[in-house]
Image 1 (spheres, one colour):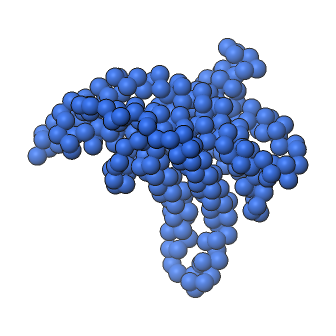
Image 2 (cartoon, rainbow, N blue to C red; image 1 turned 90 degrees about the vertical axis):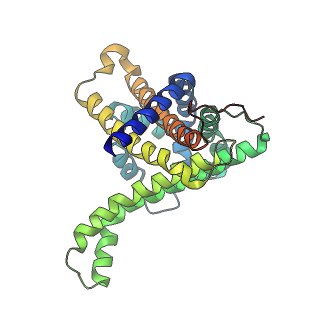
Image 3 (tube, rainbow, N blue to C red; image 1 turned 45 degrees about the horizontal axis):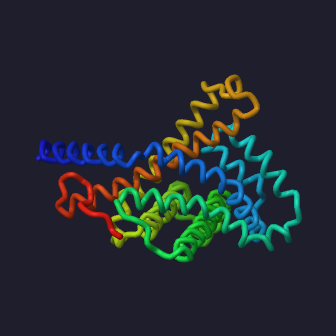
Length: 287
């Protein structure tokens, strides 16, 4: 039984490797990182606009981001963000749709990468693609904001629930686990929805979950590891000077892009295996 599982795992790993190699995931990841960099700061502006509608400081949001993003990159982000948000809050709110449109270009690049993973060509209308991109960006912004709110006010919420439940034994430890688990579950749900609706191919929602779990865990682990390396060992400023922060941010986006595309490749490989295609490739392309 163990040998059978090992054989299946090896076969799946080989087919996944072939797909990643043939689809040039590293190259697509570089393209996606470029588009994500272009849409990164518009998305932050959009997020800051959302923060303006809740009782949450931008400093607190950035402090939480420092847990994942390398310090040098965060210094660059904070500097640029402070410059672009010097205008009035009303102006940011009025330009929210335009900012959302610009930020959605990153999601549009994700759609192209996932279509490549499923070996399908894009034949949807322009406005349909842009609508999916904008809605995905909007949902992602709201989800990130809710997750940050839960992390910031989680202790206070737990205290209120503790009083309402008459201080049950072990509640504080259980709530601490829930407080940090919910953002992971929500992020997995967002990735699942993205893998479900983004590619130009009909798939079941449950078929998007394996790649979403990989993307969530892989992104968090890779981000923490890369942040630890940069903060303790890597000295990009000696090589790139004042551009060190931008290079670190671009490298982080590149790693994140590869993980996101590989998650789609995992789902595509699993679906191809269920369809009885041992090579893991689609025989024909959808037109």
